[in-house]
Picture (tube, one colour):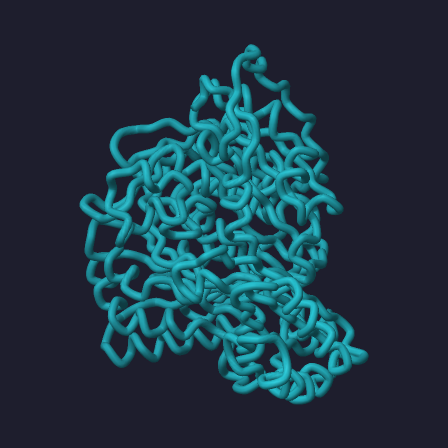
Length: 558
């Protein structure tokens, strides 16, 4: 069968607005996908729905369609997006209304069944991660636009591929290949040079990187590329980085299939073309993941600026002065960030930041009383007292948790464009996710002279969040660097280099085919991104911090 060209136009709710038009006009496509949902997004949409029961979907998607629905229809490009969020039926109705206004004969379908909120009292939103076969049913019945709620990010690709090639739920290898392609596409420009560790090495124009697309084949292989003439670049490094993003071990489990990341083979297939092949698939796990978002309480923050001499003494004074106001607050955190330099040429570079973050179930405890205590110190504390911004009254924060439900307990329903409701059966075969034995490591490099230098000179990294955990994928760009990295960067060495992880469980996964290591750090993000437990609440820069740490590196690699 013919190649299926699937592009991406959104990696998150708030991504580049013009990407949909660019993807439709810069080159040919069969399907255009958009990923609008993340853990934090579900909380935001849940709060929207509290104010308006008809809300709960990504309104940006609807505004993009106002500009692009006619263009997609004219070019025969189908659109599949999870922008339905908490209200896919509402978004489908809105798209129909929009199409009617423009006089377009567009057939709109949606997928539902992910909502588990009623089964989890106290949650603002609880949604199971569905697979791609509901999308496939909608497309096979003739839909031009399919909107979903909480499906896995890769389902936006596995669904169109299953519909196009006629795959069944037991086509594990083919589905796994589409899952890997979908995972590469899901974060948009991260596959085309965005957020890339070695961006300085490339001559490609990164001011406006194009969005990625995948050419999928009936056997599950694919080529990741981008439209000709668009910015950015696609190479084995950018695809490797995205493959490691927000993953764990060798088994990458989803509702349709478990993809074996340790079987992925990447080869450069020409300029801005990377071939993905060799992906093996296994039966999916018996349970679906359910993402739970709830309000955790209230949060407030004050950042004191400490300038010049005696930074630590100034910090100690203001902490003592604030102590009475902190009273019985449940969670109090102080962080002194030494951004100051001696004999600094500017006031800003002569200043350090003392950050106070408080959390409590009672808004009054972290509200005006705390803010007032900080403001009252303006003329009665350390010399040069000021804060970055006036403290507020305390804002609600969210908590993300995971639960699991048997696949058969969820009614996965494809609501076709003609109104028919088709239930999608759970997969006929499931399997437990047993640990994959660690593969043999390469021969270590022979002994030789070393130099103290930054890890990032020889290794790339990309990091991200999964609830309260973080993952850091690290890869080498040469076989020699891999021989060193595989032996040097153990879980214990990772803890040494990242002090925040010293008392936390750290699991190392080895992926030799990618010349990569993947570290999962449990609990480093507290209760998830919405709780903002640390300076970098989504661990987006944790990998770059690791690359900046120094260790003894063989001179032959430098």
